[in-house]
Length: 301
Image (cartoon, rainbow, N blue to C red; front, side, top):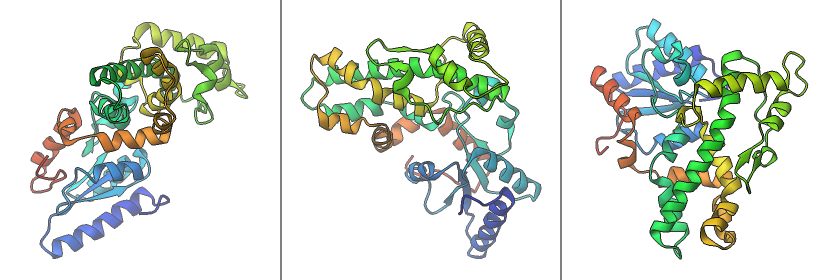
């Protein structure tokens, strides 16, 4: 499926595939996911006999395509999305029929990070260290990274609610997160986000995020964006490693903890048993019960 396909085109293609599957006596399920990495991850969990994955390239397209499908009375179609800040705002989109999401974690990366997967990665990458020490380090790394990511989360959440159109893509974690002190420079971040924006100032961003912070403690996991957590991990790990183990981070481990590589290692380390503990697993099970005989998950899960 091509990225430029519209929601109507997605629904049309799925409709054609459904007709073909019924000709052969099969009740095939079609599950839309947000992108290619999601498709790769869900390949581990889908029933290959019953379920086909479609990368729809964005949750807005998934919701729109579900609307088209429901209006046409199509069955056996669902979409799995990252709820992101919709969880905090209790957005209307969450009520979309056949939309599946985790109601505790905002995105798939956070789901992975809430599992023992990071401990598994470090256990294998730090074979010279005591296992308990490696696990303690994983907890500290995860805790500090999530705390700092929540600070960025206030700015992302504000942007979501206000629709300011702030550009986060050009940000470099190293520019505003001090790996030595494990502190985030809010002033720098606000100035950078407000650059070339006549309608909003850095002072306004700081004031409005302070109001959010006052009413919503940073311990709320839903403030975090998983990609921010992983980027921060890659940035602070060398300093945190030296503080915990009293020596520099070995070069081979440093390579594993580059941002893109770490995200991949986390997906590889994730196991079925971890997934079964998530609310997303329960959500999919409920959907399967309500939409029998359509199936998403493979039987061994």
